[in-house]
Amino acid sequence: MGNWHGPQGPFDIPDVPNYVPRRLKPWLFIFFVLIVQFSGGVYLAAATDMVGTTALMQEDILMAGYASLVGMSINFAVMFRLKFRFSNRVGLLICGAVLIAANFICAHTASVPVLVAACFVAGWFRMWATFVCNSTIQLWLTPVRDMAIFFCYVYLVVDGVIQLCGIATIYTAFFSQWEYMHLVMSGLLALMMLMVLILVRPVKGPVQIPLLGIDWIGAVLWSIFMLCFTFICVYGNFYDWWEAEEITGATILGMVCLAINLWRASFLHHPYISFQALTNRNVVRATMIYLVFFTLMATEHVFEHSYAATILGFDETNLIDLNWYVLAGIAVGCAFTYFTFALHKWRYKTMTAIGFALAAVYLAWFYFMIDYGVEKEMLFLPLFTRGFASVIISIVFLTSIVQSGLHFFVFPQALTVNGFTGAVMGATLGPALVGELLRHTMAKNASLIGARFTDFNTDIIYIPLGQLYGTVQQHALIVSMKEIYGWLLVVAILSVILILVSYSPIRPWAIFPKWKTIRKILRRQTKLQA
Image 1 (cartoon, rainbow, N blue to C red):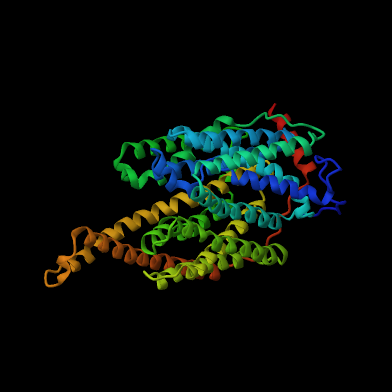
Image 2: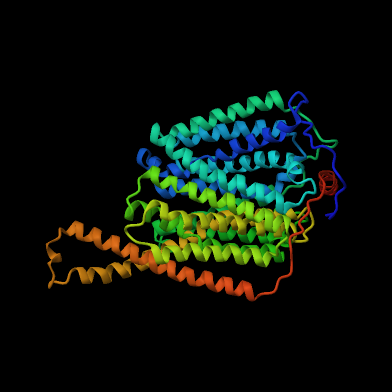
């Protein structure tokens, strides 16, 4: 990768005809990527409505949603090959058609395997379409191809859309029914396809690189491993972990697929994910940081909804309005990272310490303030801080992957590992661990509180048994959440101290090679494999 790029001429997109004003061309692709990002198969915000109208469980819908993330992650390893095999027009039309079909299936099926498969495929094609759009406007965003700048835009769009999608889904279900969200998104995808047919020409590169030499068997095996990992984390508590055949079977299947992949990577010339990518220092460091950080943030998935709905009594619309607070944190976090990390080249150590310090603020607020009488507006600070911290960590460590020194042919494999550890493991492992800790802590606290409530020297015995049980459980939930927030806060503070005493002078200088250079690299590799 070269670190210098010559001056560029005025930015233009040759795929779009000249009767479209040049200044509007990049915004056309931003419009496309927003539509694609909203189209995720199932919409997790509507999980409660889906459970109420179908035979699906909450875990089934979560599994389908996370399968979409697995599909997106596994696509990273081949996205550059797709970029140089198909024109932007063809790629967007294929992805649009597949996403429409996935929306239709997810709105009408009650079969969990079909739902999971449809979401996995939707995630794969959503990543392809997203890459088509973002790679087209990359030089418009950063003419020198500085990936720290580019990733600030990427996470503003991706994380911002996650929050907006939840808001749109809940209000669609509130005013009509949850299936209408799929109908609306299918209509927008059809509009995108129509605009592509009219406004995007089939411009092909000087050389089209065939999809030769890709380890598709490895892709399938890695996908199965990731899905098994997700299945264990999502259904573990429901099936009582390894007491059940389902969890044991998923564990065996996942370990077999992982072992086969590692064995094949030891002798294949171009495995789907190589040992170079798996053992790279920056990849390993990012994985460790993700595991710690997103475990600290796992209370988002385990506690916040239960606390706001059960304790504070928020309805669905008030719950989803909290997304605006997180969205504000994401926007400010991306802007902060852009000015400090991308432009002024603050060190990785500094940005990581800031991210973990913000996580500590988030946990400290809930530890000290969690109560029965918290107003909705009081939740702005912790939720804003959570969104702020998450985008900092995500942008900083994705940039570190680009700066890892890997050969460009191995670099997309590292992105696949980063996508799995950052998105899939971050969303499933932490909540599984914290959820199990909550179950044991609640059992302990409910026993202690119940013993006090059933003291026969008080008048509590005249409370109806059902009301007494509900009071005990509610109080035990508050006490247990406070206890777990306290332990996580200790871990966050220790993490900040450890980061501050470490030494790291490295600053971001992640420069992307020219597309012409990438095409030459991939073409040369394809000729060697043919």
